[in-house]
Amino acid sequence: MEVRIKNLTKAFTSQKGPEVIAVNNMSFIIPDGVLVGLLGPSGCGKSTTLYMIAGLHKPTEGQIFFGDEEVTNVPPEHRGIGLVFQNYALYPHFTVRQNITFPLDNVRPKLDRQEKEAIAREMARIVDIEHLLDRKPKELSGGQQQRVAIARALSKRPKVLLLDEPLSNLDARLRLQTREEIKRIQRETQITTIFVTHDQEEAMSISDIIVVMKDGVIQQIGEPQHVYDEPENLFVAQFLGSPAINIFDGEIKKGVLYVEGKPVDTSDVYKLPHVYEEKIELPRVVDEKGKEVGEVQYEIKKVSKKDRHVKVGIRPESFRLNQKDGHIVIRIDYIEHIGRDISIVGGIDQQEDSRVKIIIPSELRPKVIDQTICRFDAARYYVFETDGTRIK
Figure 1 (cartoon, one colour):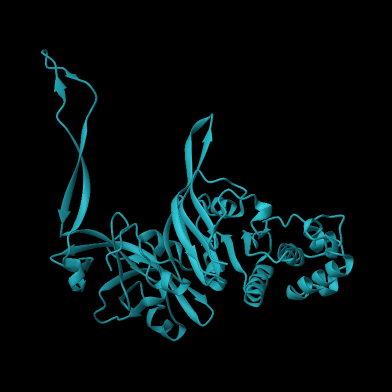
Figure 2 (tube, helix red, strand yellow; figure 1 turned 45 degrees about the vertical axis):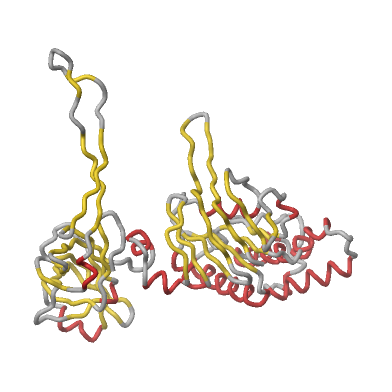
């Protein structure tokens, strides 16, 4: 089932404070049969978006379509969705079998006992809990409870499966195992699935498409690897990646990118000017005594600059050791071992507040272990305006 979101907005009002825009004019299409991750920091609007798709929140503006049918004002129970909450919401006095079949009590025409049993066993098989059908939730591990919740959501054969932070209550080992199970279940059922997470590794590992959000606004949509490789702005570049991308200061002079006063890239793209908005205070009105009256007035003026300060990003794995004539001089604070690689932690030599993390093969350790300063080049630079706009 294709899910289409058109100009969706959700504003929350409160008597104690100003209106809060949780989701701001959001539009995107989720193709039929794919697994989509809504990804972003806490408070970015991803759960609110999921609840509007589910029908639990009514949009302030905009439309939601399942296929060709608009469901914006359709009650949740009539949308054909399966919803799995963060806390599983299982009935403690029911067995696993009873939890799975509970939603089937409202199916019309009514199902008999044998039909419910067949569905329970089929759903249990899909999520690999057939041997647990007679147990109560308290007898299950967190991962097993999560599978029961998914089986229950699948029991009515929904058009769309919605998962709200489905792995947040699991320990690290179970998170890894269960996210692979979610991916397997989605592949087997081919149900359009939308799940919410703040964990970028989780989203990157199992999603067909990720939707990166910030402050209720979509920052970028695409296949996970493409979004990682080609972030559209500084926020996306910094949010995706572990360890995070290294960001430090650079300059553009006459179309050339400089770091620490050394040219590192002469691509033509840097010759394009960037337009800034500057807020300029207008002259104040004075009375006959020369006293300023009235409020301060401002004018927004657009300023175009070719030569300017920029932010330069390099992924930790993109550094290349070049002790002879590398463009980027790194001040080494300490070295860590991470499996077969080593991690150099330090800063740009002439930028006191900078922090960088560099990952290089362990065989290069003898060349850096006794050094306080090392030179590097980069396989790729990401360059951003100071307002976060991507240049290259």
